[in-house]
Image 1: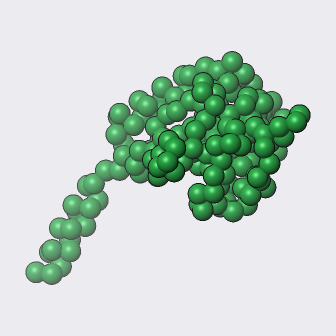
Image 2: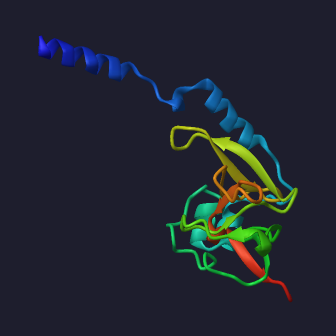
Image 3: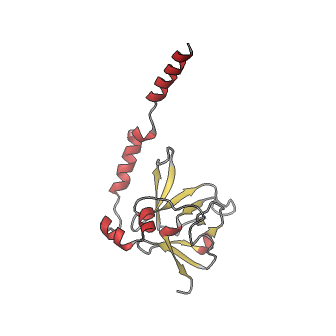
Length: 167
């Protein structure tokens, strides 16, 4: 009897499908790839211009390890720009310590960041891209400072260049 129950459970579990088989998810991925940007380059050009880590994050939607970004504890006044194309994305005035291990901001510079939904880890997350070149930046969550926007833009430091206020 126990063998029949275990066998039955195995059949049921094997029949379950993941979100990767969902046509709606596949359609959203296709839509994201059709989007065009003001700055476009071939994969070879991006690979030549970016460091290995920048390429991995910006062009392959990678994530740097937590607490490894050289910008994580940066407290200087200035602007954080896209490492791919130089577009100004975030102001230092909106940076905060989220404790997550990635540079975090409570808002973006209006019009500089595009948003899409990704299902890469099995559920919907809001992904952020540079509006100019489409480079992957990170994700935005609704657990930021309640006193401001309530948003936490969790950004890969390698996707950013910091420009001090006086430059």
